[in-house]
Amino acid sequence: MRIPSSKLPALAILFSAAGLLCTQQLAQAQEAASPKPKPEDTEVWEPVPAVVTPGVNNTAPPSDAIVLFDGKNLDEWVAVRDKSPAKWIVNNGILDVDNSQGNIETKRTFKNYQLHLEWKIPTDVTGSGQGRGNSGVFLASTGPGDDGYELQVLDPYNNKTYVNGMAASIYKQSIPLVNPGRKPGEWQTYDIVWTAPAFNADSSLKTPAYVTVFFNGVLVQNHFELQGETRYIGKPFYKSYDAAPIKLQAHGGRTAPDSFRNIWVRELK
Ligand code: MG
Image 1 (cartoon, rainbow, N blue to C red):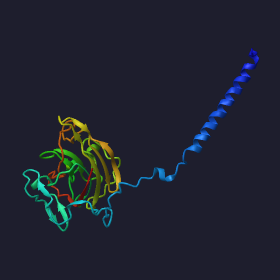
Image 2 (image 1 turned 90 degrees about the horizontal axis):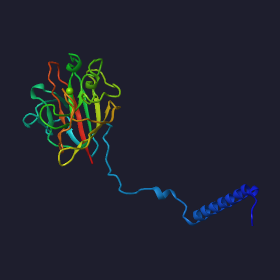
Image 3 (image 1 turned 45 degrees about the horizontal axis):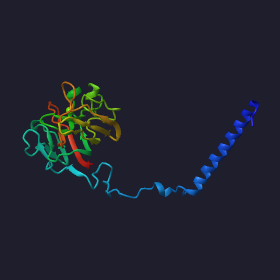
Image 4 (image 1 turned 180 degrees about the vertical axis):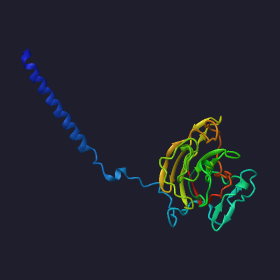
């Protein structure tokens, strides 16, 4: 049979409609045959997270923390220069920097962790810029002196300096997002999440370090990717290590010392 060309568009519409009808029927049949999705399909029940008892407040150590300084002694710390017992001054539950003793670091070594500590610039601080209450938290101490990755401690209040070296900076690598620092004489908190760098067998970098920091509860470093160890002079670069102590800086200078208290860490996978 020969179909006049004038009828072809109408036929095309007819066949398309029939095809659509078949597709719809097929979908309905498939839906009827398969079970209806339930809320339970996407529930996960295991593994159950470990129970941790939180501290009495949000700055006190939770039950799974390693307490590095609880106000009593420096049993968890050694002098960086000769690994002898740390001799900074413990007084009334507070740890004061002793510049004559140099940097101190933990006896234990760490990879990834959550760290809490509190620090205070003395009320009678003098000096300016980097000379005003300078200390620091080395998130991994990879050698003598200031080798490692420094989160800066410095008077944050009306104290002009280069912004990648101000309080809560990753020294000369990352400017803090904001400055929530308090006045000298007031306690300040750092809450830190440190993801250690990883290295290949040939010492080349496998994955970089990342750090997140809350300063007095305010986010100041947001999963920042480090370019390597922090350096006073020159560009950062990575140096292979496995696990490392946490180090506190005795920067020197003539002003009254900075103080620390309530230091604890939780190791992370
Ligand atoms: Mg410093």
